[in-house]
Image (cartoon, rainbow, N blue to C red; front, side, top):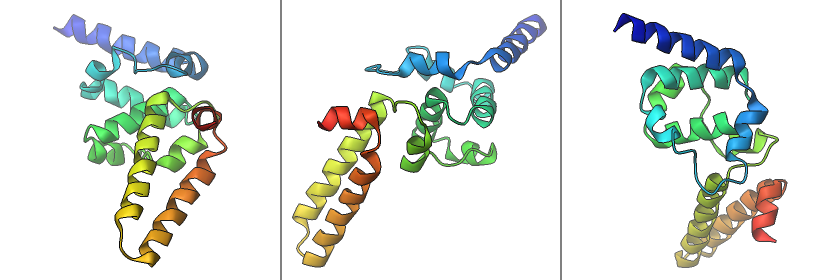
Length: 153
């Protein structure tokens, strides 16, 4: 058991030492789904810590931004805050200069659609106007993303 832990610790150290954001981001750029190994490894607290450490060091990594968002969605908000990871919001993804994963874009599109549907159901003209302005703001922010333009062009 001790030998297994030593090997595991050494592997984690190697991952931290040799992480290459460009190579890692290539794993998810344009992918229709996340890597098959990711859901299982995100369940392990020691590997989540590796992701948190890498995220602090490689803030522009699309893969790590995506992982932080997934961890948030999986209910690890308290752990994210404890580890000093800022919340993964739209602004977090927009700061990333590389392509945003297709999965994120799907979620964003669903949110925009829900906002539009909500505005249509609202009886108050003021509320409808507010909802339309919010959707317009989101679309303006996203218009700078190449992957967003390709989806809606």
